[in-house]
Length: 331
Image 1 (cartoon, helix red, strand yellow):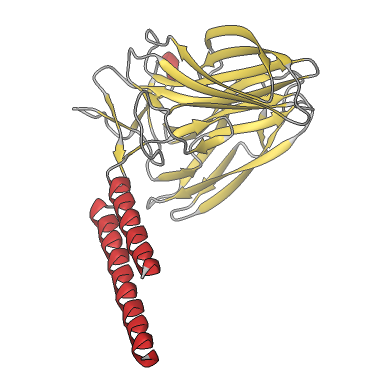
Image 2 (cartoon, helix red, strand yellow):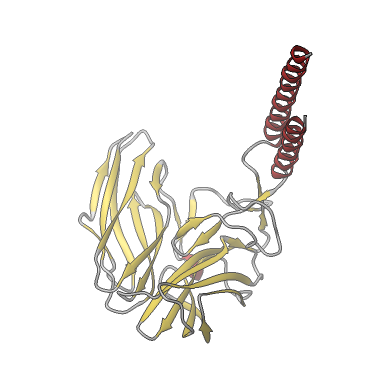
């Protein structure tokens, strides 16, 4: 009987947990090594952080207009219609002197062919395509390979891949985190993917020693750049690190113009440099950052919880019937 009671109580607890999960707010944050999900980043919000924060506006801009100058503002150029690109941005780890490669996928979802040219905006010739132009037929798809050639100096390097067709343009921003060949520290940077205009940026930074732990002085260089390489903020501090340290930093970006930026961290220590970064956006005045609700319907999750509880109840009844029959036979 105690086993049956345990099953029933456990099922009820799972049911309550699922109901609580269905009411959680959802966010996404960017990691230094790409997009990951993690809790407790978006201001003082809490809950399950697995979705994407949306930027909503009472009068949203046209979906086919993009800014050509990121955080620095500037020309407005229409986006290429019916061209699907994946991924839409890159956060790439790299090491000094070590060449690597990547791929990008393009799909023409329109009814006419596209003659596409490729240009790069970068202070360093880090990314290189073997082709400068190509044609993509209606319904056609293509994987483009590119090489990553890190410079001889560690640091945070940003740029943009520009795909142009018929006077329109689609931009794929990238950041390359170049570290020294041998890294004794693992660095991770977490920020909200979007903040409101006039708001400061809260970042969580994790430093973890690799190998045998010992107290090490680490100089942290913080840098905020746009994807054209313009630097907007630089700060430095030195810390003594043993095993791991988790930092929460507040950066004054309240006067920054709306656009896309990168927070980069360089961890400099005796013997090497580790790097990481995180992309974030500043919404235009009047736009509101709102959490997206859990993609799983609350009703669906509650129904699943009810089904689990009912199954557990049936199991309890069956077990009690079996035990009752066994006792009857013994008599």
